[in-house]
Length: 139
Image (cartoon, rainbow, N blue to C red):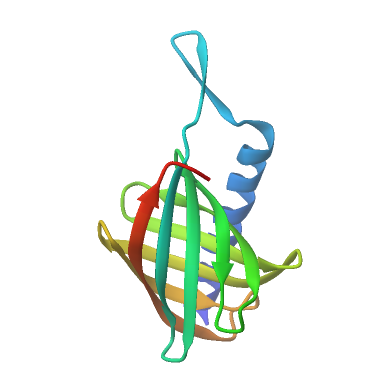
């Protein structure tokens, strides 16, 4: 039970702070010059549990994430999240504006992410893994 509360708290904090940040800024100041963030787009495929296939388009701007998740029901859900340091990744899946799932994981290698997917209330969870298909700099 305590672990579920910790996961929910981490996911909540990891979701609210990045959204506020993305809302108010889309640029960095470097040596008194304003420079736009160049996005990095990475495409992944993988599974949640043993039966749900997913495809993900992650758009990374600095440590902030946005993108699209296509689930095994062929629904296209928006995702937002954040990368912490060089290993931890946290993002939330939205279906028609409603939270549907949270992903908390780590980079196992440069091309693989493993972690835990959970429902918004934390009652259901399954391991997930993603394998990088390709990278682009075009959204």
